[in-house]
Image (cartoon, rainbow over all chains, first blue to last red; front, top):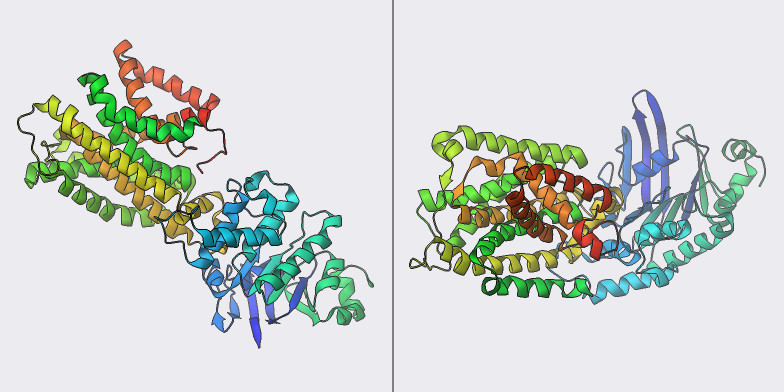
Length: 251
Length: 315
C-alpha cells in the first residue's frame, strides 16, 4: 500500500503548467529520488506532496488522508516532515532550541505556556538523542546562525527528523554541502531514518552519484510530467531518459 | 553575573524606595511601574514574536477607561474588579483586532495596529456623552483588597498602600511573563519570529501563536492602563494617541528588546530621563529626539544590550 500518493496531479500558475497529470506513489520502506532538469517541476511536486500548494487538479493522499493544500502543520501531525533546498533554520535559536521546537510539537507540549522548558527532562533527552544522530551533540548551545554551512544543513534535517515522522521529504539535502561531505551526510540521514523509525525517504537530488547510490526507485520528471518511474538499473538502461534528465547517456 | 542578580536587586530597590526617596520620586515611580508592565507585554510581542505594534496605546486606554467607568459610572471601587473588567474589555477588543492584524507582519502589522488605536482615539474624542470627549472621565481612588485608606490624603495614599500594591503587581507580572517566555510556548514564539515557514513544518501554528502573543500583550497593556490612570485620576483620549504608542517604542529601544528585562528597565529610565530633562529645558522633545537617534545608531540593543552581549534578539 502506498504511504504517500499523488494521483493525476496538475498545477497551473496562470497559463504556465508546472505539473501536468503526475501520478506517483511511495511505499513504506522505500527510498525514492525525484530527479529532473531545472524547471522540471520538482519543487512544485514537493510543495504539493507537503500540502503547501493545492493542486489545480488531482488528489494527494498520505496514509489515506487527503492532504491537498492542508498546510504543513497538519502534515507534521500526520507524520510527514520536510527539509528544504536552501538552509532553513532559526538563526537566533541555539541548536538545542531548534531541535526542541520539533520535539515540543511531537510531544504535544506547545500549549504548556506556564511550564519550564529547561526542567522538562523528556524534551531534553529527545533533543540530545537527535543531536547525537547528526553529530551535533557538541554544538547544542551554539547559535544556529553562527554554525558552519554544513552543520546548518544537518540541523535543518535533524529538526525534521526530531518530529519522528513516518516519511520525510528532503529537498536537495546535500545542496551547499561540499562534494567530499555529501556521502557522509547521506549516510547519517539513512542511519538516522532507521534509528528514528522513518519508514520512507523521498529526496529531490541533482547529484546523480547520490541518486544512484542510495535510491530504491527513481522518478524522473521533465516539463511537468513523469518521464520514468523505475529502479536505478532501469533508469541506467533507458538512454533517452538519461539524456534528458542527466544530460549524459551513461553513468 | 550582574544579570543574574538584577531581578533581586531591582526588587529590593523597589520595596526599599519609600524609605530612601522622598514622595516626589515615589510618585514618579508609579507611572514607571505601569509602563513597565505594558512593556513586558510589548516585548513578548516584539522581542519574542517579532511583531512591532505601533498602536499599543489602544490597550492602555482600554485599561484606563475601564477604571474610569467602573469607579465614576458603575460605582465599583475594588481595584481587583477593575482589573478583571479591564482584562475582559481588552480581550474583547484584542480578539477581533488581533485576528485581523496577525494576518500581516512587519510594517503592515504595525500600521494596522496604529490604525486601530487611532480609530479608538477618535471614538474617545468624538463620542462625548459616552466617553466624556476631550475632558475624559475621572478615575476615583480605588479600594485595595477592599481597603479605602480614607484617612490618607492623595499623596500618602499613592506613595503608601498604592505604591506597594503596584510594586507587588509589577513583580508578579514580571514573574508570570518570565515563566511564559521560558516555556515551550515561549520557544515556539521565538521560532515563529525567526522563521515562520520552518516553524510551520515543525508543527507550529504560526498565526495562532502570533494571536496568543498579541492577546497576552493586550492584557498586560490593559493592566498597565489601570495602573497609570489611578495616580493621574483621569482617563482621557490622549492615552490612545499615537504619541503614547511612540513613547512605548522609545522605552522598548531605550531599555533594549534583546533582554527580557530590557523594556521594563527602559520604562524606568524613560520616566526619570523625561523628568530630569523637562526640569532643565522645555525643549525636552529635542533632547529625546537626539537620544533616540543615538540609541538606534550606537546602542541599538539599548541599556540592557550593554550588559547582555548575547544574540540579536531576546532569548
